[in-house]
Image (cartoon, rainbow, N blue to C red; front, side):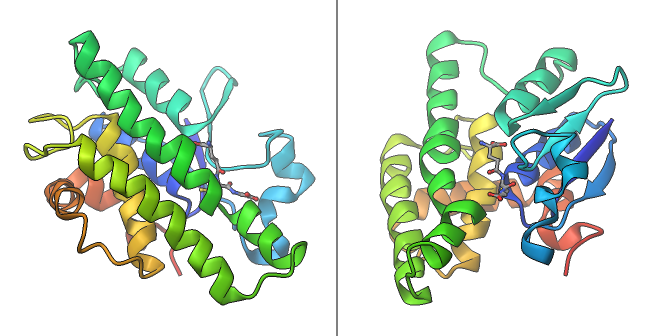
Amino acid sequence: MKLYTYFRSSAAYRVRIALNLKNLTSEMIPIHLQKEGGLNKKPEYRAVNPQMRLPALTLDTGDVLIQSLAIIEYLDEIHPQPPLLPRDPVARAKARALAQVIACDIHPLNNVGPLRYLKNQLGHDQAKIDAWYHHWIIEGFDAVETMIQPAPYLCGREVTLADICLVPQVYNARRLKVPLERFPKIVAADAACAKLAAFDKARPENQADAE
Ligand SMILES: N[C@@H](CCC(=O)N[C@@H](CS)C(=O)NCC(=O)O)C(=O)O
C-alpha cells in the first residue's frame, strides 16, 4: 500500500493512526500542501485523487481509496483486529457520530482550501481567519465535550474511530492556540491516546516529511 500524506494533514494523520493500530505498514508518499500553492493541485496528484486532497491510499490491486473515514473503515473491514468501532449498534452509532462531528463539521471549515479562500478571494486578514478557525473548533468541541465520558478513551476502554478523529483535531487546535481549558474531558481522552505508540508514531513531528 501507498499512503499519500502530508505531515500536517489531519485527515492523513487519522489514517496513519489507523494503520499503526492495525500494525500495517504502508509506503508514505509526501505531498506538500503549501509548496507552490499546494503540490496536491498538480496534474500528477490529480491523476491519483480527482479531489486533489489528502489522504489517498493505493492498494496493491491498483485501487485508490480516498476520504479518510472510508479508508479507515476499509482497513477495519479487511483487518478486523483490533476493531475500530464498538460491536453494539448504539455504541457504534455514537462513535461514528463523534467522528463525524469532527471530520464532517469541524475539520472542513478549517481546512487549507477554505482558509486560503477566506484570505485570497474574500480578502480577510489573519486575525479574522484565526477567529474563524477558533470559532468552529470551539463550537464543535463544546458538543463533543457534552457528548463524552472518557474511560479513558472517548467511547470507553477501547480506542475507536472517534479517538482517531479527535487527536488530530486537538493537535490542530493546539497549533492554532485555541484555548482548551473548557474541554477537560477532550484533553483527558487526547492524553490517554498520546500514551499509545500507534498515536505517537503518527504524530506530525514523527513523519519523514516533518518541517
Ligand atoms: N473529508 C476528507 C478531507 C480531506 C482534506 O480536505 N484533506 C486536506 C488536508 S487535511 C487537504 O488535502 N487539503 C488540501 C486543499 O484543501 O487544497 C477526508 O477525511 O479525507
